[in-house]
Image (cartoon, rainbow, N blue to C red):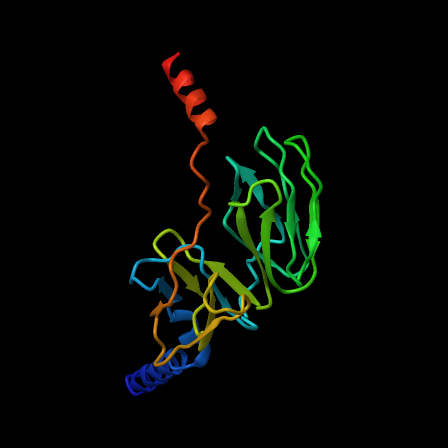
Length: 226
C-alpha cells in the first residue's frame, strides 16, 4: 500500500463508521428501555398497576399459565396480569373452603365450595377485567387483567415497570381509575424519553379482612399463652 492510498482507506473507513452509527437499526439497538413510574393521588409509588403497549414488537412476556391462590382468607395476588387465552388455576391454600365467583362480562363464573385439595382451572379467552369475589368472605376481592395489548407488565413495589425501547405511547390501568372498570390512561412518550412518571387520581386498593371475632380473639389469646 502506497502513502497515497492510506488517506483514502482511512476516509472510507470513517464514512462506514458514521453510516453505521446513524443507521436506524443502530439507534434502536442503543436506545435505553423506557422506565415508567406510576404514582397514586398522594404522589406515592403505586404497585400492581398494569402498564401496556399495543402491538409491541418485543416478544410478549405476559404469562399464559397463571395462579390465583387463596391464602389467609385473601386472594393472592391482588392483581393478576395474563394474556388473552390464558388458563388460570384457583388453588385454595387455606384450611377452610372458599367459593370463588365473578359477574364480570369478560368471564362470568362460579366455582362451588372447595377445599385445599382442589385447584379448579379456567380459560380466559376474552380480553378485559375480571373482578373476583368469594361468596363466603365478602372482604376477598381481586382482579384478573386479561390483556388486550401486545405487551403488558405490572408495576413493582416501588411503582415502576420497564417497557421496550422506542415506545411512543403506552396505557396504564389500575382498579378504580374511573367508574368504568376497563378505562385506561393513555400516555404519549415525547422526545425519546427514557423515564416517564404517571400520576393517577386513585388511592391504593387492597383487601381488608375484618377484625377477628370475639371467639377468634379468645382462641388466639389462649393459643399464644400456651
